[in-house]
Image (cartoon, rainbow, N blue to C red; front, side, top):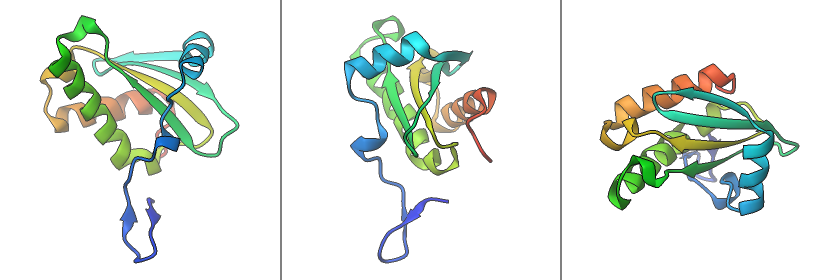
Length: 125
């Protein structure tokens, strides 16, 4: 269940603390992480001591021009933002976009990313 704010409304924000931002963290997860894939892309997953889930989003030039990469990252971030509360705690992950996400609708992207998280075993519901 998402966190509730002081007014009792669900908090679906995406704070910086829930994203991986440091280059050294990306390198560590790429090196140590277990890899899962499907049509949405690649997921690198590593156990963490932190109580929450942290995730980084990557879209390489292989999937298209800047507008295509930005769209893929926006889709990944939105799925994460809305389903963050359903993920198991104590994990850090990197989600690497595939070309599928550049032309997918939100519903298709959500279904594929949730399937990837389920395959990795971090989706609790």
